[in-house]
Image (cartoon, rainbow, N blue to C red):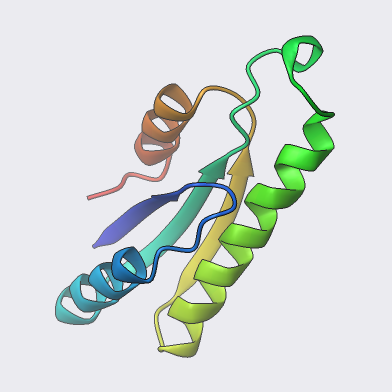
Length: 97
């Protein structure tokens, strides 16, 4: 089984990590953590895209670390763009269950 977990930049949500950890342990799943920088058009953003990417990377890194330390095989990815669309595309690319 392969689980995709979408995280919000700037937010490590312990309840989400705990839930994923429980399911991954029960199903022997691998996990792909993804965050989207939420910048559709950089010229309309209030800060450079790099600021949003850095926040997303910090969150993904924290969640990956928590899951990996718990023994779950985990990868992390940060994507540009609109969250819902990009997360669904990523889940499809990952063949998520």
